[in-house]
Image (cartoon, rainbow, N blue to C red; front, side):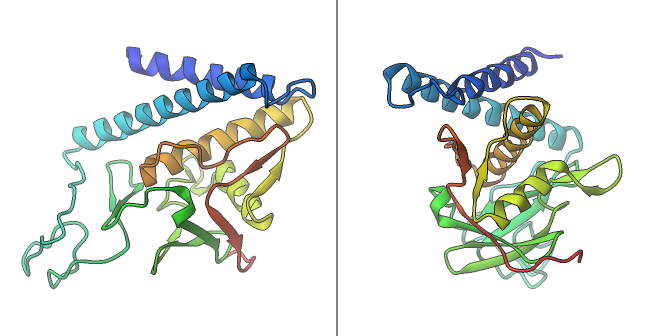
Length: 226
């Protein structure tokens, strides 16, 4: 294990410790101590997201498939690059390119500057529609990196993301115990994946002491296994 991977593991442990402290009933989030903890947690989460990007970049480099950054005026009718159709016409909105793991990497013609610009709507148990401005694209759980590679089914993190959608982005934190630890692990996994995909360092699902509330808009249009 490399040094950055060891640091990533330490950061994850520290984030969980901070979340446990902030969840205590006696913890007043308005105090300077609590604010320092929150700032520390945000810093650690940014570092974790950076480690995740480094891991994916190395995987792509090892496979010789490093995604290119698209330029607005790029295009050709022959050997169309990622982000362009077969006629050399540039696509719009949220575009994707697969890395060596088969996960769809999100690229933007116009990158969102904040989570508030993003809307995620579940069309079914397995598919979502992502909107950024006037552009809309649909993806399944595997294309967004939420596939359990052991069985090809949606990961537990995807199930929790859908739970958030059903509750309009708000999720109550469980009581202390094994369920809470599992809950925190899934939320942290969602945070890492969303930061990596959308390249936004701030927390997409902040915790206010009793509930998690998404910074982006999320909802559930339909509920079916399609």
